[in-house]
Image 1 (cartoon, rainbow, N blue to C red):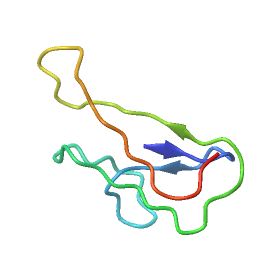
Image 2 (cartoon, rainbow, N blue to C red; image 1 turned 90 degrees about the vertical axis):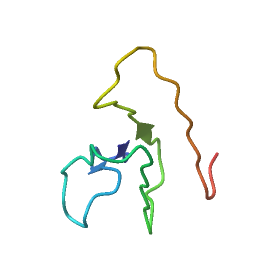
Image 3 (cartoon, helix red, strand yellow; image 1 turned 60 degrees about the vertical axis):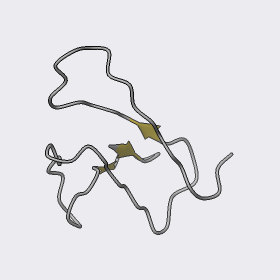
Image 4 (cartoon, rainbow, N blue to C red; image 1 turned 135 degrees about the horizontal axis):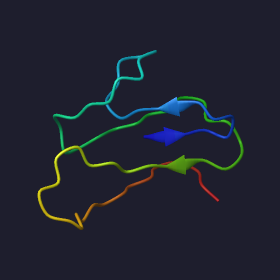
Length: 65
Protein backbone atom coordinates (compact mmCIF):
# COMPACT_ATOMS: atom_id res chain seq x y z
CA UNK A 1 0.00 0.00 0.00
CA UNK A 2 1.02 3.58 -0.54
CA UNK A 3 0.49 6.29 2.07
CA UNK A 4 0.47 9.91 0.90
CA UNK A 5 1.87 12.91 2.82
CA UNK A 6 -1.53 13.59 4.45
CA UNK A 7 -1.93 9.96 5.61
CA UNK A 8 -4.39 8.81 2.94
CA UNK A 9 -3.96 5.11 2.14
CA UNK A 10 -3.83 3.96 -1.48
CA UNK A 11 -4.06 0.13 -1.44
CA UNK A 12 -2.81 -1.99 -4.34
CA UNK A 13 -5.32 -3.16 -6.98
CA UNK A 14 -8.19 -1.48 -5.12
CA UNK A 15 -11.40 -0.24 -6.66
CA UNK A 16 -11.61 3.58 -6.53
CA UNK A 17 -12.66 4.67 -3.03
CA UNK A 18 -12.09 1.20 -1.52
CA UNK A 19 -9.54 0.39 1.19
CA UNK A 20 -9.97 -3.37 0.78
CA UNK A 21 -6.63 -5.15 0.39
CA UNK A 22 -6.10 -7.47 -2.57
CA UNK A 23 -4.75 -10.71 -1.07
CA UNK A 24 -5.09 -12.94 -4.16
CA UNK A 25 -2.49 -11.40 -6.51
CA UNK A 26 1.28 -11.35 -6.19
CA UNK A 27 1.56 -8.26 -8.41
CA UNK A 28 0.05 -5.05 -7.09
CA UNK A 29 -0.41 -1.69 -8.81
CA UNK A 30 -1.05 1.65 -7.16
CA UNK A 31 -1.64 4.53 -9.54
CA UNK A 32 -2.00 8.12 -8.32
CA UNK A 33 -3.13 10.56 -11.02
CA UNK A 34 -2.26 13.77 -9.19
CA UNK A 35 0.20 13.00 -6.39
CA UNK A 36 0.67 15.49 -3.58
CA UNK A 37 4.10 16.97 -2.94
CA UNK A 38 5.87 15.63 0.13
CA UNK A 39 7.07 12.36 1.61
CA UNK A 40 5.23 9.19 0.61
CA UNK A 41 5.52 5.82 2.40
CA UNK A 42 5.33 2.33 0.92
CA UNK A 43 4.21 -0.61 3.06
CA UNK A 44 4.76 -4.13 1.71
CA UNK A 45 2.70 -6.77 3.55
CA UNK A 46 2.52 -10.43 2.60
CA UNK A 47 -0.76 -12.27 3.18
CA UNK A 48 0.52 -15.82 2.68
CA UNK A 49 4.28 -16.16 3.26
CA UNK A 50 5.12 -19.79 4.16
CA UNK A 51 8.85 -19.09 4.71
CA UNK A 52 10.34 -15.76 5.69
CA UNK A 53 11.95 -13.64 4.68
CA UNK A 54 10.12 -13.17 1.39
CA UNK A 55 11.94 -11.33 -1.40
CA UNK A 56 10.07 -8.63 -3.31
CA UNK A 57 10.69 -5.96 -5.92
CA UNK A 58 9.46 -2.36 -6.02
CA UNK A 59 9.14 -0.27 -9.17
CA UNK A 60 8.34 3.46 -9.15
CA UNK A 61 7.52 5.34 -12.34
CA UNK A 62 7.20 9.10 -12.49
CA UNK A 63 8.99 12.16 -11.20
CA UNK A 64 10.64 11.40 -7.86
CA UNK A 65 13.25 13.17 -5.81
